[in-house]
Image (tube, rainbow, N blue to C red; front, side, top):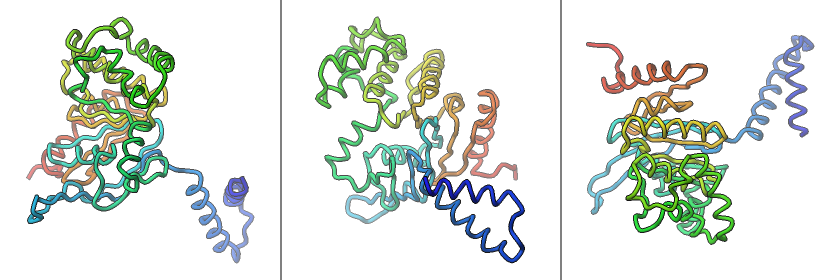
Length: 299
């Protein structure tokens, strides 16, 4: 509270002409110091990826493959971020590290200020269960479980009571329009319906971050559009989403698009006040540049 008051006070002083020339330099330095300290203590991104590098070694250590070179970015709570890149660019490796399924060779990944690389294996499993939700391209549903059982499975693993599971599940399936399907089995429903079940399962634990890996990859265009609209609606309710995709159209639903090339963040687009159509045009232009090797001019 004291720091906030100082911040406001110095902002007022800064905007006025109360300083004499002799005092100007020192007072400006003081303003900078208070501003920096205020921002440091009052702003913390939900996800912070700090200069991560990932190097894989061959079985006998003869060769090294660098999947990620120096990736650095942050994600704020409530953002919808799409990650794009060609095959082999490092985006899947990045997703695995953010999902605490792998650890970086160098650098850190923090969620709410907690460095995931410092967690023990058992802690990492619990962390994933409590903080992360996952949507996969191939749905990853269990065919011998009903859709209802698939949805509540994370809560079963967490040891929750049946009444609590039911009360958490019903609002989600109602919002996704699959309430009438939950007694069916995965092989009895369409791909789009399966993916909506996968979304319900990912949301059942109230995750801090929803990670989606090519969620429209196995869907037709109509089902893809419906799914993306639902993800957009979920995001508007405050859910943070990170989505890896090859689809320009899918990426256009995001607030920000990051392009990964050769293990690094090559370019970013922020939607701002753009319409989705304008965002799509920007993405298509960036993909074209990316395919040319980063040079937007013809030789």
